[in-house]
Image (tube, rainbow, N blue to C red; front, top):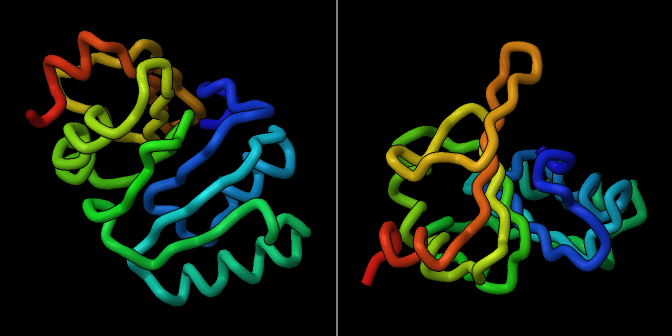
Length: 145
């Protein structure tokens, strides 16, 4: 997911449905993202993610938040990764497009964004991974007004 999104130095990475934090940690540790934030609704996973970040030595560059994705603020993200159910992706799409700047990338594991067609789709073993780049056209067509 991070390779497909061309994650690199200077990126502000958000992982929605971050689980144990491994993708956020890797974005900072191996891809050089400036900082990362993970959101999840499971308090045990958030606790585990924070422990994993501390163990990886990136606790100063990452944070994990237990909370509702629909109340989250990710306007500063340059790349967002998702592993959410299809209906959640569709409900979240307008918020992503409203908040993210043109040029930001969204990478989704396994599930698409309905009629918003991805820029690229790749198969990794049995998994499908999708990439979108936020454009002004997509913002006008799919974002909430």
